[in-house]
Structures are given as C-alpha cells and as structure tokens.
Amino acid sequence: MYFIFDIGGTKIRVAVSADRKTISNYTVFSTPGDFKEGVGMIVSAARGLTNGQKITAIAGGIGAPLDKNKSGVASSYETVDKSLSHWAGESLRDELEAELRAPVFLENDTVMIGLAEASQIKNHENKIVVYYTVSTGVGGSLIINGKVGENAFGFEPGNQIIDPTQSLCPDCRKPGRLEDLIGGNYIENRTGKLPEEINDEKFWDNIAKYLAIGLTNSAVHWSPDVIILGGSLMYKISINKVKECFAENLNIYPKIPKIKKAKLGDLGGLQGSIEYLNSKLKK
Image (cartoon, rainbow, N blue to C red):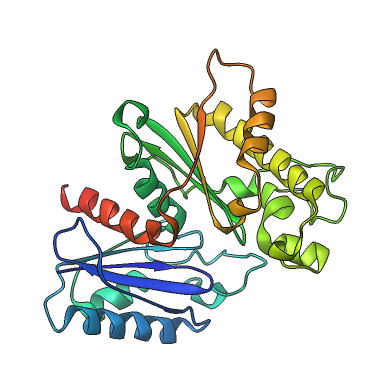
C-alpha cells in the first residue's frame, strides 16, 4: 500500500494507492498552522486510510519552497500567506518516516501537479512542459520527458521581477514580482476584496497581461513545447487574453509554445505524487 498527500496553505489532501496508478480512500482536512499538529493529523489519516496495512512508500507535495535536502519547508520560507510559516525548518520527512516506517519522498506541490498535468498531454507534445499555478500565490515547474527538470532549489517563477519601477502596480510590494501583481492573497491585500468579488473586466485583462509577461520570460528561458495553466484564479483570468498577449510578446521563435488549461483540478497534486513516487521507486 502506498500513501500520498498534498499539503496546501488551507487544505491537506491525503489518499492511498494499491497499484501506484489510481487514487483510493481520498480525504481532505484543514491545514493546521502548528507543525506537530499537522504531522499528527497526517499520520492518523495514513493509519486510518490503510486500515492497518503496511505502507511501502510515501510521496507528497508541499505548497512552499523546500530545503536543499527535500526534507521539509525551507527555513527561509516567507510569504504573505503565513499558513505554513511554522512548518519552516522542520523535517517533515524524518517525522513521517519515524512514525510510518516507510521511505518518504517530498517535492513542491506545483512540481507534483506539473508532473500529473504533463502526463495528460499527447506524447508528441510531452517533451518540455511548463506548468504555472495562479491561486493564492504563483508557482511553477518544468517537466522534461515526464521528469522534473534539474534544479538546485526548486522553481519559483512567481518571484520573477516584471515591474522593477512599479509602474504597473504602484501599490504592489517592491520589487514588483509577478506574484505581487497576480497572486490571490496579494490582490486581496491590495484591493481589500477577495479575487472572486472583483468583476471589473479591465482589472482581469491587466492580470492576464501580467501573467503573459511571466510566461514569456519562462518561455525564453526554458523553450517549452507546452505551457499549462492551473490554479483557482484561472476561472477569473481569460486564457484567450493570456494567449493574445503571449503571442504579442514572444516573437523570437518561429513557433510559440501552446498554452492549455489544466485538467485535473484538486486531485492533480495527489496524482502527481503517484507519478513522482513511481519515478523514485524505479531508480
């Protein structure tokens, strides 16, 4: 039996898989701010979902930058979303391995979702895939031939600077990162409204333009075949507007990458954890 999980800022999703292909016994609970409490909840869920069966291996994604050893949230973790701040510097891997007696493989949750979404693409397009998530913040990942692209500290495209003089967003926090302009928590802090309460078409057209700038930067750095867009704010952002602005920005290549919407929704992180677990167990 294999245990998989997806730790986000507000929700933890956990499940088991008997065949490393399909998800079963899926459940969700709120993410506690306290690390020890979170570990206890995950361990309890694992034992309950497996009905006492031995767990062979564990994989999960975390919605925060990880430390160099991929053992837990990096000690330098800092964001407007403080929900995982008390998890920083703690070794989730060590805690889970001690409690559940099985090897644990961790990655950023956006990497896990990127793996899952890339697996949904036709084979001839599934060579170099960039995945972006636009929700409370902005994350991303690079998937090459179905595997996570090599990196030293993970992927953080939300931290790229696209507005150094703050001419696009005078109220954004310096130095004008993409995440400051389009992340949900940052929009709420700036406007005093939840993103879903904002119905101004011009506002969302601007968000689409800013996103397209970020995608253009990723495209010239990574030269992908496909870019996949997911996250809770993509229901507010016009993908057609993003494509239009992206095409205007990117004129260095004879053919621009395709832009597609994510397909897997809330289960993407869990399905990606299965993909990641398979890649680790094959080694």
